[in-house]
Image (cartoon, rainbow over all chains, first blue to last red):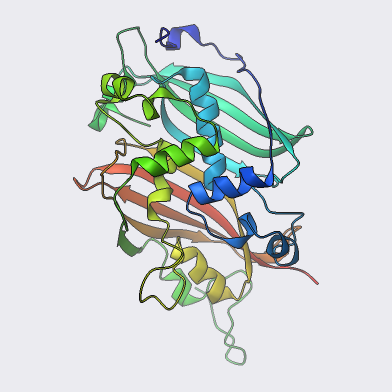
Length: 158
Length: 181
């Protein structure tokens, strides 16, 4: 396994590599079913258009959370431990869209317990339009022998 | 305090009906998960977003880093979405019942989620049986957006494992609305 990303190697203003993904109807339906979200606007085109007034079926919120988690931990590696994610949905993501996930480091800190934290502003855009903004707080090792997953109780302050 | 118009039974536009106001801060719908956390769903979720994190695919890595397999933290709410059908049930079960209660109470046929915060605590592991409850935190006055006219509300969902350890808290902001004609 590669050396873990440690918090001392991260700086405010750093950017993460872009993730580009072509969304299909399968992406939307698979994501909804993986999240056990049976609501029709995530698999039924007619319902989405004529009842919800949207262009097509669209990615559901829990699956977007899974996309954001994957994007963040692709960067951190397995020692990265998510503490908190906040999303704001601005628009929907439809089949035929190419979504781009990008992120910038907004803060790097250690809390009172010595846990290292990185705050990321992650954006999901389609054709340059912001569809979902996500703020992610993720713990990283402070040294090669640290492991945020070992923290429990009051040593874990997400 | 809101005053009710005796002729219509309605409250002023900027007020909340007393029955809704009384629900704010109340624990509602305590619920046990319908099935244990399962590895198959973990893989299905990872496959849906092409998540190759070895914590979820490589037992040796999981043993080294997280003392054994865990579920992706973002799957927290997955373990509480009811089956689409189950024997003896006559009405479709819906997750986040408080959200649907508010849609019905205010007569708002459509709804979207606008904001979602998830705070992660103890890792969730295959075999865990979780429990949860919902708390309504706020309901807005009527608002008009490009989708239609309705209300925003904030609902928190707290999750615990079988050892009563907090595993996460989700906060949802929903917008229930009626499309403007």
